[in-house]
Amino acid sequence: MIMNEETLKHIKEKLSLLPNKPGCYLMKNKDGIIIYVGKAKKLKNRVSSYFRGKHFGKTAKLVSEIVDFEYIVVGSETESLVLELNLIKENDPKYNILLRDDKSYPYIELTDEEVPRLLVVRNLSRKKKNRNHMYGPYPNVTAARNVVNLLNRMYPLRKCNTYPKRPCLYYHIHQCLGYCKYKIDKEIIDNMKQDIIKFLKGDHSLITKKIEEEMLLESERYNFEKAKELKELLDYINITLVRQKVEIQDQIDRDVFGFYVNKGYLSIQVFFIRSGKILERHSKIVPIVDEVSEEMTRYIAKFYQKNVLLPKEILLPDEVDAKILEDFLKVHVHVPVRGEKKKIVLMACENAKIALDENFELIKKDEDKTYGANEELKEVLKLDKLDRIELFDNSNLFGTFNVSGMVVFKNGLPAKNEYRKFKITVDQNDDYGTMKEVLYRRYFRVLKDNLERPDLIIVDGGIGQINVAREVLASLNLNIPIVGLKKDDHHATSKLLAFDPLIEIDINRRSNLFYYLERMQDEVHNYTINYHKQIRSKGSLESVLDNVSGIGVKRKKELLKKYKTITKLKTLTLEELEEILPENVAKNLFDFLKNYE
Image: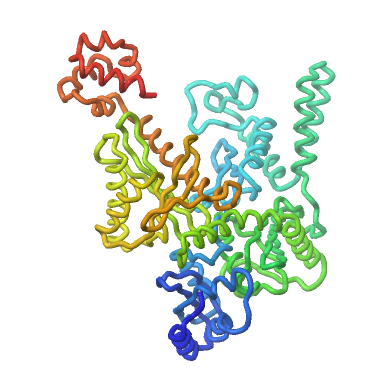
């Protein structure tokens, strides 16, 4: 979008009033929606830089959509970082890509109980009292569980959440000492705890020796199958768990950040160093929008808000502001200039470069299938912008358990936290009536609560569904484009129905746009079907009988008293049902039960 003269004049006037003080700025599009939040040491210099010179990639796209901005002055850079993170969390701006979809990491917890247990945990905010007994982070939950299974195999710890009345299977297979029945010497438990802590801190020698001795013993007993199982455990430790040693041998827990920028993308690499070894690493590659120093500072600050335990020290490359992060995180943050620490930072940067070089083509293809396909759809439908799409689908069984689902795609990607389920008030097989109710409920709520409006609504159906949808929006005085996805005889997406009057738009079946539409259609269909199954699986016999025409309060009470479960009722033949119910009611119930899973 090219700025008109009035918008340009308005922005220039606001730029002239900007102070050279620390603060946050909020970029807005033509609808007044915040599309980017940033911070700056000097607001005037940073904000002005967006409107001079040439920009590329995502930055150029951002600038093309800016028609206004706001700013908030604060007292220090640290305050601006805190405010920036809060504003991003509150507004979820379109171009603050780096902070989206970053997972939290699993840790292994050795519980602080008289008889400890090993658990895999993610939500560390609930574990403030036991953070000294958290070990990790691990790259994924499978890796963490494998370690827990290994330790439970080697040490007979408690496995139960609550003590059972008698020893369970774990006791009989020698993986528990039967704490529920027997009093175990505290020294035995403490020795196991010390061995496990050493292992989780990176010293695998004790367990390795223990496995080797047991493997040799089983071989001497000619129990080769058991010996082979122990050999596999030993291989798992030697190949998977023995980490890369680093030259710093001070045993301090530290995280090391490195980055690499090329072709409009920022690649970030984090090493988690524990007990002098690289325990795990994390990587992230995203399109770059802001200055590298700002992107990295923002990312690192947010990284430790996503259930990642702070180490004793964080090492950073030269370009990142260590002081502001140290003030914010309250741990030692250091930019090394020489020595072994500098080598590790350079190694993290080299790994960031390798990750970007190896994955660049794959990332570009993925972006073409999401963001690129979304842009193509925008061009096909001649829309000014297409940041948010809402899709609807209906599901029912034999006119009962009538439900609808809505999924949301933002900038080509599913926004799962914004999906919505609708239970229809009237159970009858009426797609048009269902569509009317769902859309009215959704967009009345959008108006009432001033929610973000979609740029496009997609209904899973043809001309009839589109016309019903347009009637509902017209009754609410909303002007949002509505399109339909037409299916062929094989129930596959074949055409796009759009514009007024409606026309059919052919989509190349090998294009990214076709796969994008198909993906959205599958997403809303599966989401709605899963909700439908949930409703049905929760349905008791009582709720089933409520959905059968001809069964009132009295008959329902008699059937509930006699049969109690759906399974018992399903064993009856039609003739048996006709003995206790009128013929037409018996037929209704029999047909319903026949289709009920």
